[in-house]
Length: 506
Image (cartoon, rainbow, N blue to C red; front, side):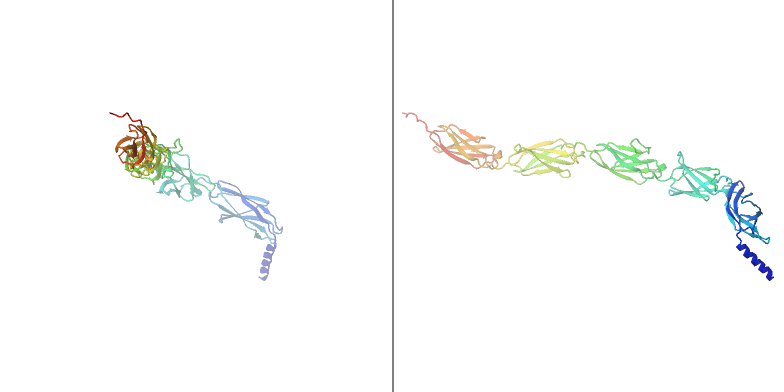
């Protein structure tokens, strides 16, 4: 017994010390329907341990032994199932110096036979359909179902060519963001591990009703005094649910516009509001609507029609309110929306230019003009400006005078020429309010006879006729306004020239 144990120990030590041959490059060389051909190279080792045979185990189940003395060997394994991975374990077996067998190093490889095409799926159905996602399920093929590695699910909109696809490793799949209100052609195709395709089955269904998205790229286009053009593109969300657009402008105008394809202007849709009022701000709301009148969120735009010439004031009233002020009032055109501000101008015929003042359009349509000259006539005009000031109406005119005041006394009154029966006096207009001196009143007093005569003229130089020679005269001059307010008098004295007296009488 001790001898036998010693012999076994010596044998194990000898095998461990021996450099046994080994298998290299073990691989699948060829495969086909139901078979796989494996191949390998053998590297020689210690000649005391020559190669005896090989042991090949298939899928950890069936083991066979065979011989191959070549340095390159191959082996065909038949009756293999398709579409599953097969594992091959190859072990070289060597003779020992005592004639027994010993196993070499294990080599392993895997492989597939040619795929068998699976049959078609059946009973494609929709299990859930919302705005967020749509889910499908189907039954696996009855034929060669084990050869199905995945399913290719494609979904194409009716009438479109684009056919996006997703893959699923089970008999269910969820597709995101499918359009609502749409007819889809859904196909399911089984795929083998080598990506060979089985029969394709199609299912046509219509997605749920939904609310279309908001109109996109909304833009205000051409604007005139009577029109506003609105441009926009169709919504990208749930476009197929779109039945019409609802548009509201201001508070009174509402329109329904059918969706259209891309217009010449570069937008899908356009609509022109007319007739509108010029110089008017508008608020425009637009939303999408489906057949059931469910609407999207609104898109709000703001626009204003262009300006035109405003209308002239229908009336202008001027009322003196003192010797230096005049109140100007003017009428309004209620339907004139282009009336922005007013310009009031006045001219007295004396100063070289007229004066003007702007009045805002949100007041009472009146202006009190101050610092005017008393006793003066003024021409007034009122003009309407558009809100931007670009357009101006015709002017409406009226005129009046400021109230009278007492004019000042004449200046520098003196006699410039004296004769026997006449005398010429001259003076200058008053220094104070000369415009109020509408009439010059001259009183001539005979200092000898204590009589007087009155001359009413409007000149500041006057020749007084019919005087007595050799007579002292006192001359008083004053001015009077048009309403009868008289100034202080200024006087001067002089004597007519002497004349030859007549012959004595009787």
